[in-house]
Length: 337
Image (cartoon, rainbow, N blue to C red; front, side, top):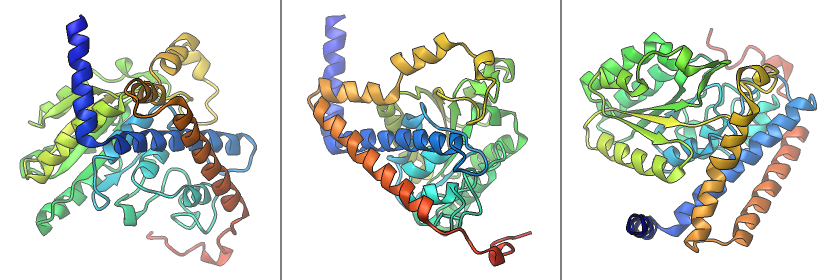
């Protein structure tokens, strides 16, 4: 046991040195930003300052950050109705994110998309999508474009375990495998399809779905940002070499309900389960412990990052609250129907 622990520590030290401590610190900083962003979204909604609806990403931060850090700025992502974390991890600014959520003109989609329809082509974010599994075709199309242009850009499609019940996911996986497209399908299994445990809605093994199309698949601890990053990095390199798609299953957990107004949470999952994930499996705490154990950062440095992120969030909320709404005369602009 002692030898195994020593070996793991040696591997951790080698991994840290090879990648650079600043990258790990950046991951911690980004996860903190996402967590605090979502806390503020929750507050804005509860105090009736935010229109529409929101699906919070709290608890799943390691997936978005671990995946997106492995990508280049010009690589593509498509997101989901629970997409704030993906957008931020891919490079979205906090102030424009809040502006979009509050329906303000300064938002990424001029306040017309809201929480579930944020896109930013400057960072390769082709958009969040309120339709379950709805962005699978967009990501696969982006990968097809990359291949046709002779580029080495990679597309990542984020979706939840519930999307494994959508036919389009399998149609595009089949196409991606046949044509060896540079796309990575990232399934965030947070255990629940809205209000039902995934074991009651999805038969068989989740990775088996992609393996049926000959797509290499990996299952990782979605609360361990280092594991997500390492596995994604290998998949990205494979895609850039022209070897085709991959499927990444990340087992994770959402701390809040299906959406911010979900009052049924107390009935379909236990307080004990929630407490276990928050106290024993929190991705930010786990990375923070790893950073301090290896003297990459101490508690004061981590606290400082939290204070800086909180100040950024507060300033961005003020910006969004004071920003103007789009003019009523623009109601029929930016509409494709």
